[in-house]
Amino acid sequence: MIKVGIPGVNGRMGDALAQLVLADPELQLNAAIVRPGNPLVGSKFKDTGVIISDTLNNADLELVIDFTLPSGVMTHLGYCLQHKIPMVIGSTGFDKQQLETINAAARDIPIVQAYNMSIGVNKFYKLVQLAAQTFDDSWGIEIHDVHHQHKKDIPSGTAKELARIISKASNRNIDDIKILSERRGETIGVHAVVFSTSDESISLFHNATTRDIFAKGALVAAKWLVLQQPGLYSMQNVV
Image (cartoon, rainbow, N blue to C red; front, side):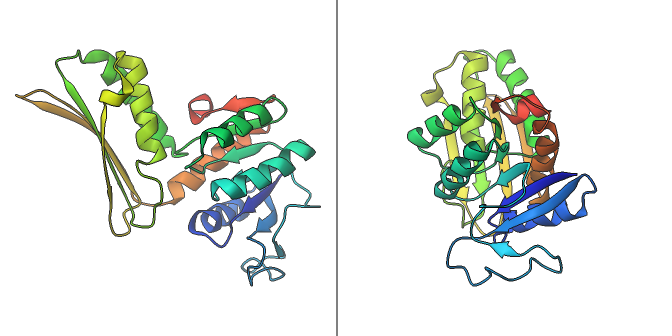
């Protein structure tokens, strides 16, 4: 069994990840982490024997899956780098320096970093890439990005990745690809890419109906990652 640590188990994604790890016969939850000062520290996670901690220190781990804020990821990355522990990173909102830190760490440990861990979204990326190669410059392109009202980053990491994929596949300037973002209610995640002229339009669309798709994809990435050499990988490598 792969011994897994999950930071942020008090959050929506962290809780979903931990629950799926507990249900997976190939994985073992060995560390459930929250921020220092959280009142959950010292209590059991759900009905398990795993004691919630505010640090990864001294945990017996073979892998960490992290969907916390960038500042938390940097802390956990330092620990993983020191102890040569592979890391799956599903967080968004990193600045340039933080991304450079992740890139540097990947020279010594295997890392999967993706703005969206959903297997379906990563299939969607491939369909968008194909479509972008098909339409010439007479077709305009828009990306529609809808998420829940609590999401901090606008546009989403998924929308930015779609723009990068389209730009590379079509040789268009990335700044010419319009991203329309909306934050409303509890929408988990909706992304659409619209190719259009004045006469017609074609849309590719992905709708996330449960956060479990991101957690399930992260677990697929985790099982794949523990077999890899140091390097920075994406979900495109995994799927």
